[in-house]
Amino acid sequence: MYSEKLYVFPNSIHKHKDSDFCIAKTEENEKVMIVSGPDKVAFDGKDILAFGKSGKQCPLSSENSLIIRELFSFTNPIRHKGHKISIGLGDRLGLASGGHIRLLRNLDVFPVLAQQSMRELNLTGRTYEDVLAAAVWAVFQEGYTKGFGADGDHLKTHEEVKYALDCGFTMITLDCSEHIPNGLDCASQAEINTRYADLSDDITGELENMYLNKTVSVDTNTSLSFNSDDFKRIVLVYFPAVKHAIDIFNNQVKGKNVDFEISIDETLSATSPQAHYFVANELIKHGVEITGLAPRFVGEFQKGIDYKGDISGFECNFSVHAIIAKMFGYKISVHSGSDKFSVFPIVNKCTDGRYHLKTAGTNWLEAVRVVAMKSPELYREIHSFALSNLTEAKKYYHITEDVGNIVDLCHVSDHMLPDCLNQDDARQVLHITYGLILQAKKEDGAAMFRDRIFDVLNVHESEYYNNLEIHIGKHLTELGIVVNAKGISVEK
Ligand code: ZN
Image 1 (tube, rainbow, N blue to C red):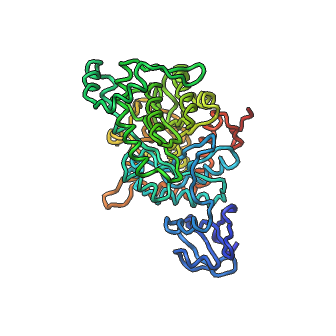
Image 2: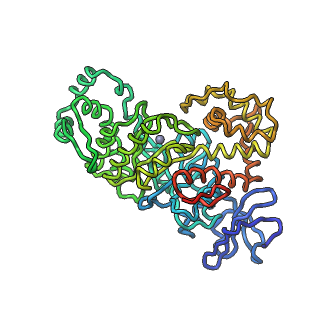
Image 3: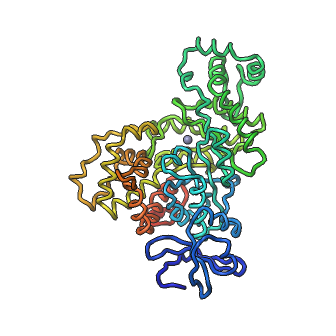
């Protein structure tokens, strides 16, 4: 267009008054923004000749993204409330959102493109500014104007919530796990009674009036009963979490145009329907506006593999949670949703197609697949590093892999390496070691893998987008959303 040496993304050409913009890739595979016209003075970059005028070549930095957000309103994240289906797509490397947009742009699915927890920020060495900027640039590159969200995922404290909101995030997922005493799940009834007796009458009086020995109906066919034993246990386990959520809402979230999701999913045992009802009812009674709630469902939602457990048991449990959410008017939120293909049809059916689903880690696995396809030597190094650092990674993530099932790569030829990413145990190992892989340093302090991974993905971006379209497309297919993409088209 203005230089033979640059590839311009066709949907990235935008105009603001007398200024022209686009995203381009240089010969060195670096992505840049080109701007010409009066707006160029606002951006950090170097002067070049562009569109026949003097222009600027600008890095896709977080600072420059802030100016883009001022000039182009569609590049600002918005909340998902009002959209029936929203999907959290967390992009750990900051390279996946373009692929996600290409898959979703013509579907009735609201994408939460930026979605990262504090744990993921720490493990990837990123900031919320970086995470949001990556989504903003992808939206600009693809000319995607239908709106996207940004989720400060699994935040626990006032400081964390404030940080995400200050950066412009439009969704807060409050992780209440530190206020849910896990040990009480299996405590004896005698212990529960003793502890309950220690609570102040101010608290228990009101709660007893509301729930004790009461039955509430949540739809015409479903009612929930609170017998004395269950009631006391629920109060002890969940009331501190309720208080925490009320405090965060009133002091951080109230009055802001953001989605507020309550996460009680990081517990040892499944959330009972009564506990779900209790948490939601108490929050709403205290004026907390919730967009979604994530219970811990029965069975196992492990990282990067399908659901483990009895499918019909899941359906019985999930359907009641869905009814409660529907009654209160928020979305049920399904966390660790990557690859849970066998339960997706149930999620769709029981919610009447109104839910929030979070996926994240498999975007990383698809990136690793590109490495296996295009740089076999690098893949072999990463694979063996992941295996030898598994114990460390398991401090952060619970998985039940059996390393014995993973084939020895000595016996795998290069062209078969991508297939390693189809084997559950290998998937889990590579899934949870992402932080260690990205942060690994050589003796001289240089990155062991990080830069090489980014190089491969920058050169082979279209393969990465392609893999994402196939993989996330498979999720959408199982969810009953018709997908017309890369050989996975289904007619329903
Ligand atoms: Zn969660």
